[in-house]
Image (tube, rainbow, N blue to C red; front, side, top):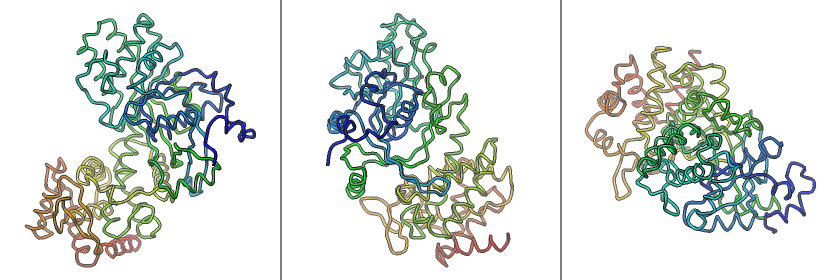
Length: 509
């Protein structure tokens, strides 16, 4: 089996008119500096830039900075001439999609530890316009850092050193500022990164002229990325894909069909990020809070309301549950019937319903495995952040008990019933199978379950302002509904309770 590389493509890609020839690639300027080599960056921003290049829109390549130790991935990029394959698998409007794309957007990958001067040289290039990053959530944190180290230890320190080198090279020319788009999964990532850069600039005693240039000439954009790009596929999957492709790819990346990169920016940002014209999944708006809310409430919130039920009913994965008629009905009706009207902001309901149907397609994706038990990690915090605001808004807007939410809340309380504790933590049991409760409130719930009858327990849990920031027993009928479903689950079984619940809903309608 041959290795993916430019020589390989010269021999085998003659008929692929969408793939640029090596001489065309060599002529494309390095317009993007990217911190991070992870699969999310390869499967979303880099994929989108490659797509734009193929359409003759963006016409720029990416210099990637690898900040972590370990040379295996760096060596693989070098062996493959920085090419890699994205295998897109999933459902779109119910139709199965299978597409393989060889991405050629990356020009080179540099080690921050070994090639820091080369990275600073990129910073002084007149072609450079954009910085992208995904350094995990911990990457955007303020640390004491010296930007004159080679390299600085933190991502903000490295970025500040890059910006300072650029400021010096162009004598503070305000037309040479950069558009900086962090993709780390934290709210207001651009705003937070800019604040850290400014604080680090002061701590490093950089001149006032630079600090003014940093604020006025550069654009740190809040952004939201949403695409499931699993890590390295298991050996069986990788072997099957390599056989299908006809070449070996050490950097082979699987992604779902759905993609969203929402970026906050003005007309200047839109002009610089011209690759956005190549794919409707890139959205540049002055305010992206709507897209954040849709993802948080409909995708993440639905996951959170459903994960306890999924585990307790004996389903391992989201797809397995969605293949079951009862669970599919529960998830879809929860999302479209209660979560949509519960989104705590003004929105176009048709847009929200359309987004919800895309989420259902994603949940059904046979190529991606979401394990319900993984989704239950820090269950209590997720319930508070994702779902309590939705529940409260539903009561304000619609009134009446949201039955699907109440059933999901009852399943959460039952899931948190610990049977035993060992060195790994607290364990529950479902259908005779033990499961680990990975939640910082696990011992709190263990005490409650050992001390109170279910009705009292429900009242105590729902009334806890420390858990929810609000006394949920004040919502008319909610506590009674949650207790009723919990009692049915304890006495008649979880799956049977879901079946009876849905049967009653159908009878009423």
